[in-house]
Image 1 (cartoon, rainbow, N blue to C red):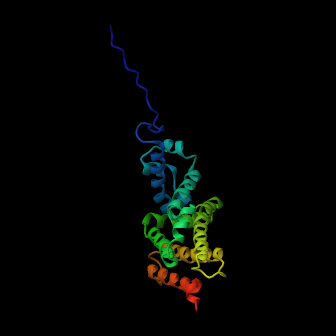
Image 2 (cartoon, helix red, strand yellow; image 1 turned 180 degrees about the horizontal axis):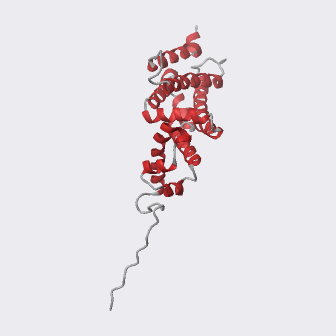
Image 3 (cartoon, one colour; image 1 turned 90 degrees about the vertical axis):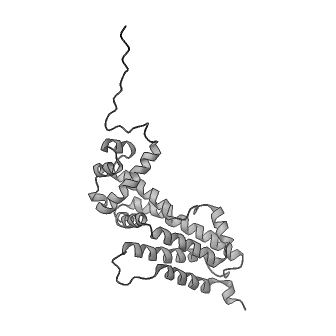
Length: 228
């Protein structure tokens, strides 16, 4: 009696290996590999074949996870924007925690987070990509607005409201406007430094800038500053 031959099922070359890595892990690997390609070549110059090769996949496998280059870029934007913002920025509990800190310490904590992100080479590449592609695609600009700017500003506003209720900020101060002013001042200086890194003609000490900005805010809004 002849031994039964084992049936060998051949896997198509463009089919992702299901036993090698969970789907979410492969997706994360693709996003990681796509950033330097997009950052170096821009959206127009980046190719799906090149991104697939950088991720160690076939081009067909790449299309299993993303419908096309536009889909991939938007997914990258969403994932990276979440890394930029403060962890738990959309959580009321985080705002309550910040409100329990002295005002200066709270602002310094937020500034330290932004500075740490600004010093990461990958985040610098991402921000430059965001600035260039956000003007091309309104969807990317909306992702940045909805997943970074608005949650960070709302968290800051809630924390400032609580600080005001504790008597640390003068009653006549509009905390929504104050949150926008603080966030814009810090974010724009960080973005400016990232975009012009290595090419600025008048570089500044960014940490010193943040410290002085915080001191200026404290002097202007603190209830203690005008107390008799």
